[in-house]
Image 1: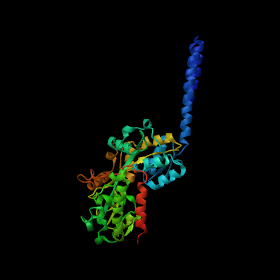
Image 2: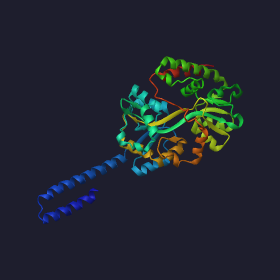
Image 3: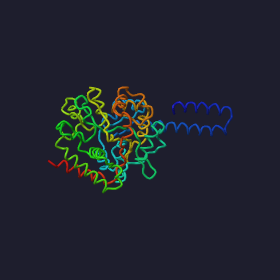
Image 4: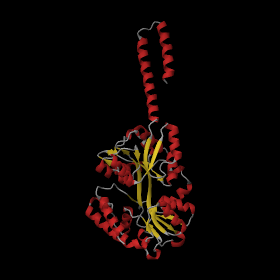
Length: 383
């Protein structure tokens, strides 16, 4: 831009001097030089920004190569991806005081608690975000869960559920809720994770609501201890506590497992391979999660962060991300662009009022996970 402005400036000054405009020329010259310098500054800034990578700490399949390459083509910014999960995200940011990454994708219940305890996130500048891209109800709900002192620390990106994946050909109707995985007739044929979602799921199965008990640690501990006892009794009936998603999927494919508690996306992946395996919403309700976009306290490339947020919340890009993760997004118009098969799977899994029965994870208060950790350690140690 500077190259095109300066010659015109010289020509303009030459003409005006010849036509005797001594007072106007200096004024216009100063104005044009300011515009030229401003244009040069913007150009230099863009070049510098393009040379600074955007460092993402995120889940597998949340930043596919196709989307990264499209972002670089549109902005010139390279994206560096580190795969992680909720626990590791908190651990990495806690160790560095919120440095090392520019954008992370923790679940909405893992934002405010760690922020209050460790100060690892910074508020999101909503003025720099195209809020119209989001589904209004999902946006407002997430802002409440990730809000603190009038500031917002997380924006919704994906949502999904934990429920049951079963082999309907062999056990249709026999596994309808979480505790059915503990039925002796399926001994050695079922699996769950040794994680707090399993305790929470069993609590709901028992008719308790651990989320409502968050405000009363003693009540919460009593509920979770009861769920822990149920899981402990179930331990001998399980094939294993699963950790590897690939192993779990392979054992469900081969028939080594007939049922498991897991994410909807894994169930839909298997269902795409064989109609005999389905993801179902349990009678007591699926557990609902929302993965957000949050900015670490010491993020360096903030310009890149907001470019990325506004890029991935475009309907066309969000649809690509959703197909990669095989889940659904909080972005307006994205679902209409997704594969018809995935939409049909969602409709089949959440028939009737089951969507309304989803138990959405609220923000986790400080100290709650310590209660869960002690219960899980006791179960792990038990023979």
